Image (cartoon, rainbow, N blue to C red; front, side, top):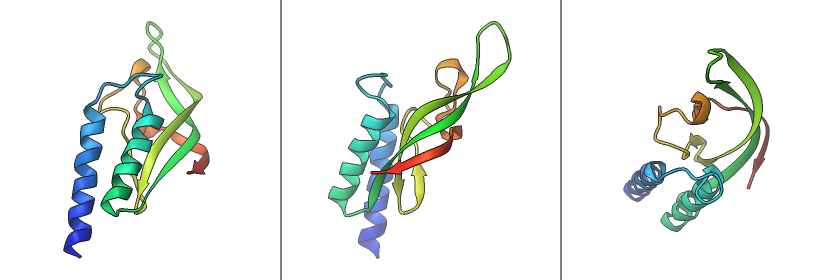
Length: 111
């Protein structure tokens, strides 16, 4: 039991390190960070799966002050049923004030 708890703690620490890495659309995006974390979790003996989705995101367009909802691809890691977001540090907003943890998936694929 203590080994499982220690492994989950190490997985959480690895997730926080990945969140702090700069987001790059082509080189270090949510899918790449998720695949890296899933590999690290598996090496620790923690079951982890990458979830790729097409979801709905709410964005604020500059100058208009109004929010729009649009479809967007997104990825995260599912660790023992918990959704672990890796795009940015939790609570930070991305481009156009998009909060990755608030993307609502309507099509999911577990890898």
